[in-house]
Image (cartoon, one colour):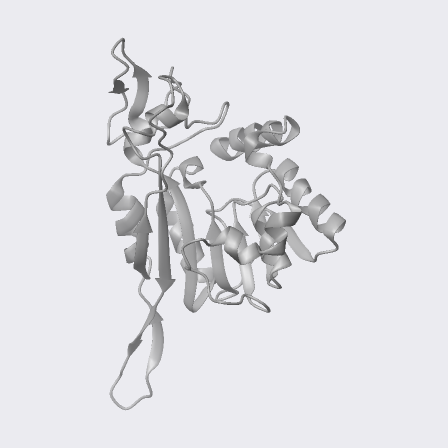
Length: 267
């Protein structure tokens, strides 16, 4: 599909250029991997022996931290260049993990209920239908499995420019379904990538309809009152760029007369 090819090339280029998104885990972070991953206490006290899917998460950071904490780690990413960073760092630290080149909205490589945790950084903006990603995550998670994800907020993706008074302009319609157009303001956009706006009813509503229970929601701050106009932290004072969600996969029980209870997905 065209958006996959375009995003694969974009992220391969970012990996080759040592972008800020390719910062690998440090020794200090690996010494306390869960604290680094989870300052809010969303993860269990230990992930040792748990099956963890780092989804659309290549780059040598998240996977290395989970592996350092003793988890059985699988990394899925569309970009071979990003996955090579995971493999390089794992070899350097003598950690075991599996890397698979695939798109987040097609996890046919995995059977149902394969993972205890799916952890996904900001990436759903690179697929046109977030519903497909949520459906696949719901399928591969075990019952009561944890899904931690971060997304670009729709208002942030609507911003296209800044006027003479340093006010930010919403130049993209809220109900935009096509790939986002190029913009003058690139504070929270990746050069060359094909990105899509997902509305709140999709970010949260589709998550619930896929069979998840939302347990927490936070907006990581990227604001700095001292940042000059044009800096991404100046823009972060006026609109939160990201939202982070903690959700739990729930499969409901149905009691059929004359039979035992069975599990059915809420999809």
